[in-house]
Image 1 (tube, rainbow, N blue to C red):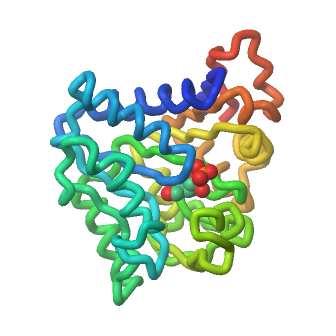
Image 2: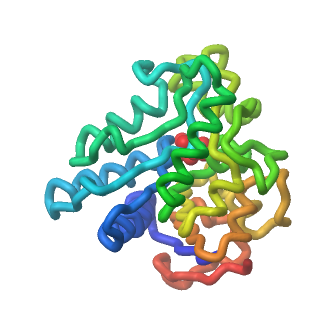
Length: 257
Ligand code: F6R
C-alpha cells in the first residue's frame, strides 16, 4: 500500500480527488466506486469545482456507492442517495440513471443485494473505489468481523458507528440499525482503491489499519491485500503511524504490504 501524507485536510481531499479525476479522464466509460461521510464532502467539492472551472466531464461515468441505510428512502435527508445528489450528482453533468446506490427502501433487501451485485458485474467492475474509514475500522459499512470475501449484504451497524453517525440524525436512537453494504470482497476486486482519512480522530484507527495486524477485527486492514491501494492522509490522521515521521509534510511514503 502506498501512503501519501498531506499537510491538511483540504490538501488530502484534493489529492484524492485528483486520483478520481484521473480515473474519469483516462477511461471512455469510467466506473467509480463512491463513499459518503464528512471526509468525502471536500473531495466532491473539488470535483464539482473542476467540472465548472476545468470542464471535468462526468457524462460517461457510471457510479456505485458503497452503502445505504436500510429503511431510509431516497427522499430522506439522511439517506446516502440524498447526500450524493446534493454533494455531487446534481452539481455535475452525470446521467442520474447511471448513478447507483443500494435501495434502502427495497421491499426485499436480500434481493436488492443480489440485484446490486449484478449491476456491478454488468458494468465490468469498479475502476476506482473511493473509501473513508470509520472509528470502528469499517470500510463501507463492513464492521469488525466482516469476512474479507464478503459480498453485498445486509449488516448490523456497530455501536461505535451508531455513535459516530448519531449527530446527523439528532441522536443515536434515530440512527438506522442496519444497512446494505458492498462487501470487502467487492472492494478488493476494484481495480484501484483510494482510502482518505483526515483529522486527529482518525489517527488511532489509521495506525491500526495501516500498521497493525491484518485482521477482520479491523476491516480496513484488508486494503493491504490490494495490489493498487493508496492511503491519503493529512498530518493529523497520520500522527500515530510509526513510519510517518515525514521530514516534509507532503512526503510520499511506501507502506509495508
Ligand atoms: C459511507 C462509508 C463509511 C464512511 C466512514 C467515515 O459511505 O463508506 O465507511 O466513509 O464512516 O465517515 P466520516 O467521513 O463521516 O468520518
